[in-house]
Amino acid sequence: MADRFEIIVAEDNLKDFEFLEQLITGWEPQPTVARAPNGLQAFELALRHDTPLVISDIQMPEMNGIEFARRLWERKPTARIVFWSQFKDEMYVRSLLKIVPPETVYGYILKSNTRERIDSAIRTVLVDEQCWIDPEVRKVQGLTGHSQTSLSDIEYEALVDISLGLTDNLIAQRRYLSRRGVQSRLNSLYSKLSIDQEQFHSEKAGEALNLRNRAVAVALRRGLINPFEMEKEEREFQNWLVRYNRNNG
Image (cartoon, rainbow, N blue to C red; front, top):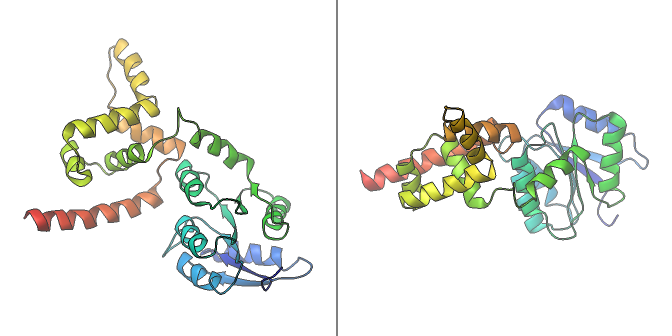
């Protein structure tokens, strides 16, 4: 390798880090291991290398694994990153597919795998320079990449807004839309999630669904949203609300 053989492990959970450290230090030749307990420190460490070699958790303080990878690949497009996570949420897979540079080597391994499989996945990406994607994640990638089921950016934006509990009027103000524009986005979202079909069958049975609540429930099941990321969305909304109230007070 042209770069010094150091592997950066971005992991805030000490036990998970110790597991990876023990795994990696058993290699021959033995690399050095640098721990970063959050995405920001991992980013600073990675910038010291021409071709950073990184194992990164997804959910971390300061900066999550997706944002860390996005910033790093902007500066170091040859960086090789293995995402290791207990989550295969569609929102993470969707975000990741948007930021991977062309011909970049990366991996995604679920923490639920065996020690041997995790070791093999990490070696494949960081040493053999080949991509390795967990089969369970590949299934989600297929769903995310299908035009009939994949959400567009504006549909995902609409999902976030109703998950935050925003009214049509507030969505219109925040997204610079007419109320008809808001309804158009929501109808498109319901169609992608097949909520419109559920509504049709429900009405035939004499009961109507609450489309917003049903959309959020389906999105949670599919992993399109999760509590961790919604905390970030809530902070962004509160910041917008402060500016909105100040400008319209």
